[in-house]
Image (cartoon, rainbow over all chains, first blue to last red; front, side, top):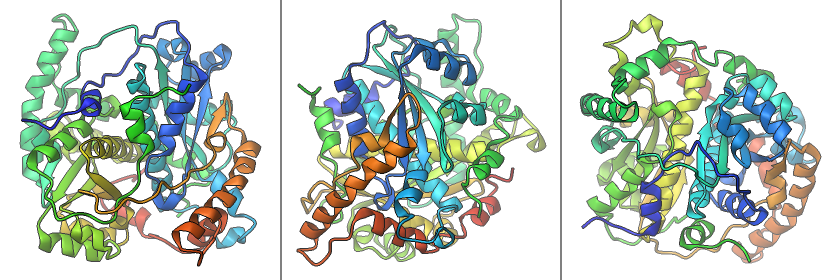
Length: 250
Length: 250
């Protein structure tokens, strides 16, 4: 018998939601979601992230245009932008140290802040779903990351890692199948051969899934979709942008 | 009345666990935990992460020595190492594209893989806690990241983002207070002044917490702890290491 409880069931039935009902997310729901996010683990208690809740229609419109123009960014009642944030840390420590003594600009701290933002956001996603809401992550915030950052007045040492649409689901998508467990779970050491071999079976799984989702017009296997993705130059300005914001200078 | 349910309650009572009972994590629990991790969102379905479950005492001993020598890495029944993984993606796409056509080595894809690993890991943390288990994240896997990677036979385009001790809690730590909600939650745009001002109150909160935890021998406020942290050169080899593994070459 498999281990089971309501929380596991909730985690196992996650689907990204891209159509939302015209129902607001209440202030209490928002605070419960962000409160849960705050309880996620954080590296040495740095809490190196911020989240911006955008509800103003004009601003959502502008952000949507910059992030791939997906209708659901406009339509969701709350668009959360999750940011890696070392700015707050720099400011609160400035009274206790000379700026040149700080190692805030390392690649290590970019990773720390990015991970902190992601752990908090995933707790928020779970919290939102526990309240009957639906979410979708938006990587498109990095499409034109300079303009997007400017639209939110992000200071130095802050960058938008991803967005998250939150609202009441107005669709019931099927579960998207994942890689076989044994392709992502290794034992004792990394198993290079097994991870690749087990992933091969996933091509058949994704062909069937695509066939069903497209009504028979597409059956592209995962490995081909991934090759198309890697063939495209995407967000090539990230390194330069992050360095211009004070991240990963060394 | 605040929104409330069992999952929210679980998220709100998270504490890192650093002492574990001598009880194994069963294979079924492990598969439930990693199965829940797999259902987290992933950027364009790349699933660019792997997790290595280490239970062998000799190997845990070696990894503990490399990762800060914390006793709980040795003592926990399962030590999970969460890796950003673009290796699997490179291998499965190699039949469909020339290596030189691939943009796998961008900073964008480093972020994608790091975020994928973190979202999956946080679902795993929540799943483990829902089963009555406790966890602690281990950033120390990045202390000597080259030796740690070698000990796990990590190939090119894979790096250990963090570890996670999992087991039955043998302690009941108090909740660690977080920054005021209004310091991390911004409205419509980033509020540089408010995030810093609100964080000031946290210095008092952390002094009281430290005083209680240390039995009165310490009352260092957060901003001072953070300044000490930033003053130390930490994991300065990250950029060079990541590039040597094929990440963020551009």
